Amino acid sequence: MLFAQFQSSDPFDHVARMLGQLERMGFSLESMSVQPSNRGLSEIRVVFEPAGLLSPDTFADRIAQLRGVHAFQQGQIQI
Image 1 (cartoon, rainbow, N blue to C red):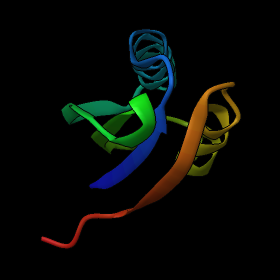
Image 2: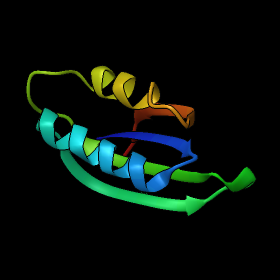
Image 3: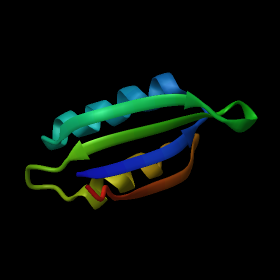
Image 4: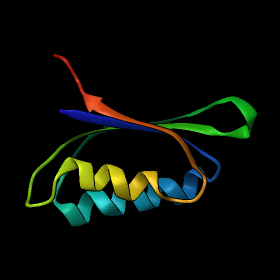
């Protein structure tokens, strides 16, 4: 499983766009959380299982370039 997390200035928009990308790419959503952060931003974290033809890096690139997304991180969850 992989994760992506970032700070957002517009969590309603960014969560909707992120979920849309997961669905279009055929990835499986495992969990998601949205927490208040500093400077009026929200911390968004999603755990997903990649599937389909596109790579997790493509998903990460699409989310990281959204206006208002800050401190984007991605990685693998060690179980």
